[in-house]
Amino acid sequence: MSEAVKPTPVRFAWLRSIELNAVLVKDLRQAARNWSVTGAVLLMMAIFFMVCLAFLLSDEMAGRGNYLGAQLFASVAGVMMAVTFIFLPIYVGIRSIAERASTSADLLYITTMSPARIIAGKFLSGAALVGIFFTAALPFMVFSYLLRGIDLPTILLTVGYLYVLNCLLLLAAMMLASMRIHFIFKILIALFVGLPLIFYSMAAVLGTAVIAGFGGALSGGRFLAEALPIILTILLNIGLAGGLLFFLCVSFITPRTANREFPLRVYCAVMWAVVGLELGVWALAEDDWKIFGYGFGIFCGLLGALGVFYAIGQEDHLSVRVRRDIPRNPLRRAVAFLFFNGAFSGLKLSIVFSFGGVQLISAGLEAWPMLTGSSSGIHDRIEFRTGFLMLGLYIIAHALMSLWIHRTWMPTRSPMWPRLFFLVSIVIPYCATFVIYYLFTQDFLEDTTIPGIMLNSLYAIADGDEKSVWAHLIAALVLTVGALALNAKWIFRRLKDFKPYERPKTPVAHTASVTVTPSATHEGPTPPKLD
Figure (cartoon, rainbow, N blue to C red):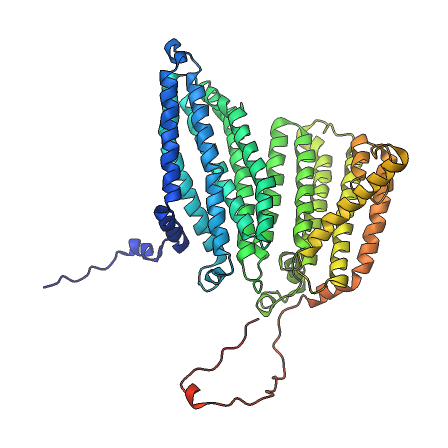
């Protein structure tokens, strides 16, 4: 007789709802069947063996020098970074691009999995591949400890740092693969942006003296006071950058009918607050106001400028699915406007990040003597505010003009064209002015003020020329007011159009009757077309 199935205990019942990510299983299965991954692991281990054998048989080994361990570790780490930092991002990026191709793009939209779960599965599979490569290299790295010249804490911390950095490069490759641009532009970005970033990361890891000092700090009793805060800060910043890349990937593969910008913008707000808090804590710990004042100001400026550039390439149409999520309360609706789809809402949120950060810096500057009892040491805060405001107004003016040109002359073109107009409107006038000025004066633009040219204002900020800065500020204000006047009707339409969805009161009359054929009597009705 068959025994009855025993019921699952209540405390273990929640385990039945856990399931592996389908994308993770699929990608790992494909990687296991792909000889390129297996061949890369075997080739890397063979190179490690030859490098270690060369060190043991070299003439320097007879002298038992105290530096052979560090040299062997640097050699093994260099080979591992050359493989994992270049091969794995290319492998993950190519597979992601293949899934985004026109022949198989529907596979991303017929599944019930959320875009975040899809990206998480692909990232976890890539992180698992990185772990496989690092596991193959770790024994050779630990072997370098036996040759002296390097300690175990330095080895373990360096390997952990390399692993986290490699995962960040994987997210960058996935983001590039998910972008809605032509394949040629993806290759150009990978060559001229991705490869220099990878080589710079490799050189920074091999040449830094901070990580090499962690072992001494640990053995000398200075780990908690010196090394641990630096480690936590590096991990926090890498995690924030990885989260930003992750939500960018999610936004790129989310259908346009959904509120695809909401998770990304909420994360940017959280990241803005966390970075401000982090810099504030470091400023108080080091008793140096410049860490927060200049650090947070530069971060807010970069976040605002990149946010403006990203926002002007978005569509303004709000689908029925998005309108159903718009709050009916006016106050909540005003806040929610910043986090919903649309170019104007993205511009407003970027302005809040930039100039809101400047206001926090100014408020903290006034409260600094009361918090620490010491002076902030910043005497040029007026110049800092003026230069920040000038650059911000220039960026806003160029962004609004790019949107106006796109709506006026190319309304049927892709919404990403304003990003090209934005770059062209900044670079072309400066280059043309530079060439004309040089032809007539045989001199450069460093000592000349030409209001209205954004790149020319950087010379005034660098030289500290107050008159030139104010001239550029007035020109930027005039350009911004003119751009707002040209876009006034569009801005008012965007604000008026942001309202909850309401069903039509009168039903739409059918204009044609449906004829039922004998062959279609057993078929269901035609599904409605979704927005």
